[in-house]
Amino acid sequence: MTRVLVALVLFTALCTGRANASALSQFAAVWSNVNDYTCQITTHETIGVEVQDRTYDYAFKKPHSAKSEITVGPGKGAKLRWSSGPAPVMSLRRDTLDSVSFASILATYQSSIGTLTEGTAETIQGPIDTVTLTVANPSANKDVSKDVLYISRTTHLPVRRVRYEGGILVKQEDFLNVKINTGLKDTDF
Image (tube, rainbow, N blue to C red; front, side, top):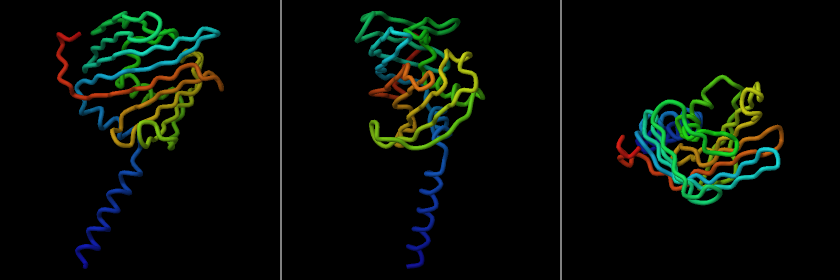
């Protein structure tokens, strides 16, 4: 009976410790063990009265290689590749091929450009945590004042990112069918 009670206390302590860990730190820990990944990214973005909805097949390999193909929406069939130097622009809001990578997203949230708060939200591809970045200087951040990252509690990787100018939604990215450590090679880029 004593062994069962001790095991139960240890298990509860372990679970509580995991629940209290920062969603962003869990994302960083998982990301440190990822060499490459592929996914689909569906986007909805606006700038002024212009609206763009697209789906991309996306691949990334550390340290900084990325490729993307537009599979749905304006520019369907267009392919972009990047391995160093200035990355090509891939979206209406002038986001670049590298800026949608998990590496870039993590770096943005780990930067000191604003205040972070964490919470939970509705289920998106399973249970999630949220990390909200309230930007201190939106004019230096493409006018984005709030940037919300939805992180899976199962994989600890992003499933959605939503950005706002004031109270107006200007970009939503959903990361679907994420596959990590697929064995991508430099020659794939």
